[in-house]
Each structure stands twice: as structure tokens, then as C-alpha cells.
Image (cartoon, rainbow, N blue to C red):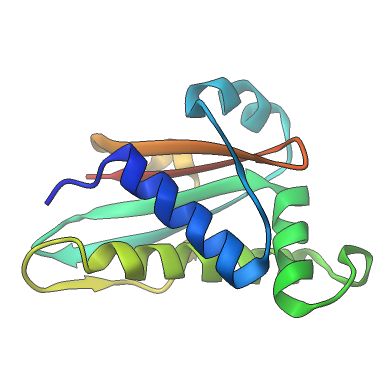
Length: 144
């Protein structure tokens, strides 16, 4: 089964809202390319293997990662560090991939999340969605 951008957007919004209580504002993903290039970002990938071969990539500003960590760990973002931000984004990427895995036919396995360089990921972009959280960027994409 193909995952549409609408499916991916709904899934990401649902996870961020139910797990963190954070409401994401959906925007055109392409409109965030410049912002992501200019900002300090956190990027994690989760690989799929089996019937579906690909990678889920979640990239956001460090501020978005800190806001996610603050909500996840019930602390002020001022009390958290870079490792907390990375842990939160890694876990959110893993949750998203785990939910997506159920949409693919056959047997599929997801890897643990890994920090990645998004420019080194090659393949066809199957779905790409963009969001803002407090005016800062988050992009999630599925690459086949």
C-alpha cells in the first residue's frame, strides 16, 4: 500500500497531539526548505526492511525538538539539554515508523532511530509533509 501525504500528515499530527499535547500547524513542506537549511536542526531516520524498503526521516529545528522533549518529559525546555531533544525526536520518529509499518503489506521490520544526514538519503520521496510548531519547522518524509 502507498502512504499518501494526507495519511502521513494525519499520523504525525495524531502522535504529536496524543503523546505530547502539541498541536502542529500543517504547511507546505517545500516552503520549509530554506528555514531548515538556515536553522540548527535535529534529524533522525528509521529504516524499513522486508516487503517495504525505505526510510522515514524526521527533521526539525532544535527548538521544536526541545519543545517536544519538554512535553514528553514534563519539564521546562530550560531544564533540558541537547540529548533530551535528540531522544524525544528519535522516539517520535520511531513511533511514526511503527505506525506506518502496519500500513505496508507483508512482513516489515523497523530499525532503531539513528541520527542521519538528510542530504545523504537517496531514493524516491513517497510522501513529504511539513509543519510549524511555534513558528519553527518540522518536516517528515518517507523515502523509498
